[in-house]
Amino acid sequence: MSLDRKQHLDLKTKLSYGIGELAGAIPNNILVFFLLFFLTNVAGLNSTLAGSVLLVGKAWDAINDPLIGWLSDKTRSPLGRRYPWMLYGAIPLGICFCLQWFVPSTENQWLLFVYYSAIAIIYYAAVSAVLVPFSTLGAELTQSYDERTSLISFKSAFGIGGSIFALVLAQMIFALLKPPTSYLLMGVISGILSILAVYICFLGTNQRYKFIQQQRHQVERPPSEPIFSQMKIALSNRPFLFVIGIYLCSWLGLQVTAAILPYFVINWMQLSERHFTQMALAVQGTALVMMFFWSPIGHRVGKKAIYCMGIPLTIVAQGGFFFLQPGQVIWMYILAVMAGVGIATAYLVPWSMLPDVVDLDELNTGQRREGIFYGFVVQLQKFGVAGALFLVGQILDWAGFIPSVASQPTPIQPESALQAIRWIIGPVPTLVLVVGLILAYFYPITRSVHEEILLKISEQRSMKE
Image 1 (cartoon, rainbow, N blue to C red):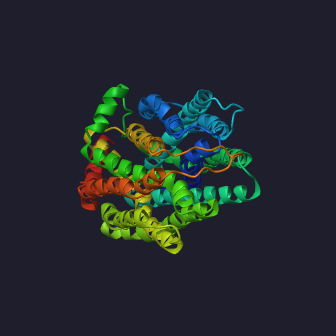
Image 2 (cartoon, rainbow, N blue to C red):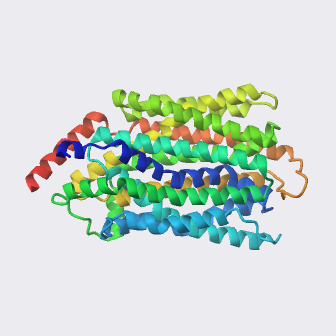
Image 3 (tube, helix red, strand yellow):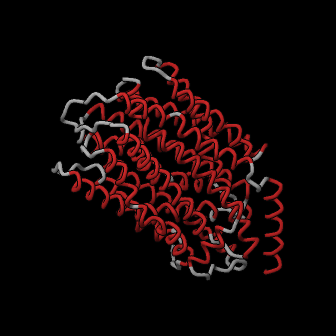
């Protein structure tokens, strides 16, 4: 095999890397769509404690993701810096995800809270061990700007595809089994698939990873600063702060919507659970299709341009949900499709901006510290999920939402709870997405700026060789 051909990022590597995204996409989407509803309506936990379950893990996660990113940067192993963390973290990730859907035989609120909080802490530690190193591979499997965009497109496509698969899986299981058995089976299948996805990713990308690292070995120094110094360096990178803001606003806005969606469809629109999964599928299916539209457009006009074109559609759709009335089912699905068109850019753009930020850091410092940067972003992803669930749980509790247990009749919700559901699905995520849109407009690394960064890095590397 010639050197040029070997340097080319092949389809096998892109597919294998994309499959690795399923380890996070499948369980994370099931969590955000179903966990709060499961805790309040199946396990019988009150909505304040239910919304607090995942937030408990954030006390540790405040340093967990950057810590694992820093440690993976410093890891020295025959398998490289990232793979040992992924391989050892995959199994506890799968097991703990299964246990999240087990209902203990107690009605004591605090025992239930302690059980689900303990599982969440262990689960998110395992998620960090897998997803931080995995996400970092996106900047380490290629050195080309265009190939990175292509690689992230595969990651994003599998992320949306994993979400769709999770929803289809849930719909099939819910049609065959009743709670709580249906939720437990969903957790077991998803946990096993997550483990398999990590190992398939390793087998399919390992050869390419070794090759790229050999190319960089002579021109890059491993980061030697302590973790807090590296965190300070990362946060002093101004474009990185924009990426953090764009990603957090995008993710938080979308996860708030996903968390409240089952309540909106079932309690406000007065439809069955089948319509909830179909609504989610309409959003995610549209986003998956539009991924193949936005990616080539991004090559022409730039990353932030497609974000500024797509997200306003999602903002309009979110506002439309607020005005929907029971019986307007067709309009509900039209707005879902409109939201999906813009959501595709939220999946694609922040992750494709991140390697540009890492390149700028290399230009400024001469080091590659992908782990720290990606650790921050994975941390934001988990904050988005936990923050969305906590926020929704708190608002529902304040509004008087009545929790229920699967074996008991469904209670009639008060008007205050129904109005809270409308506000959470409409104005709240709309405001957050508007802030993200403003940040994207002022993001400073354009295509021409990045080309200049790459040119200067190439000159620096040539001088070191």
